[in-house]
Amino acid sequence: LWKVHPGKMNAFLTDARQHSKAIYEEWKKQGMIVDYKVYLNSAPTGSQDWDVAIAFQLKNFAALDGFAGKAEEVANKHFGSKESRVAGGEKRAELAEVVSARLMREVMLK
Image 1 (tube, one colour):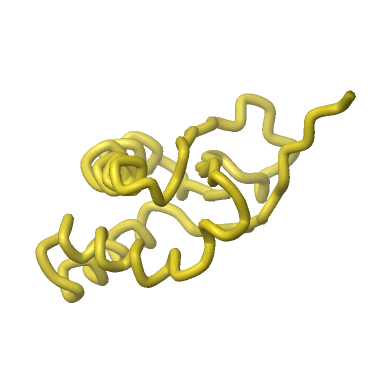
Image 2 (cartoon, helix red, strand yellow):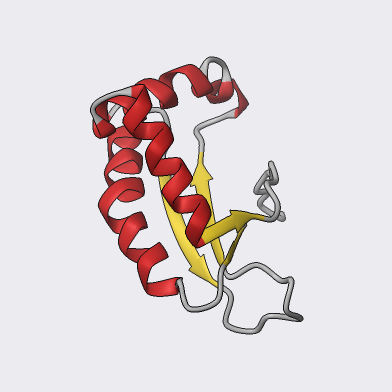
C-alpha cells in the first residue's frame, strides 16, 4: 500500500508504467507470480490513508521461497545494474512511501 505525496500521482503512475509493470510482467513470464493488480483508493478515510495498492497473486505459499532473490535479479536486469535499481527506488521514494505491506490469503466460501 502506497501513500503518494501530494501532486505526485501522475509521476508515480508514470514510473509504475515504465518500471514496475515491466518487472511484474517478467515475474509472470518466469512463473514467479500468477498475476498482479493495481488499485486506486477512491474513498480514502483520512489524510494518512493509502492511495495505491499493488497486489500479487501467487500459485501457493511455496512461491515465496527464494522470491526476494529472484525478484532482485529481474529488477537489476530491468534497470541495467543494482546501482541503477537502487537509484530508481530512491526516485520513487520522492514520489510516494510504503505505508503497509500485507500477506493475505484468498479463500472461497463454500
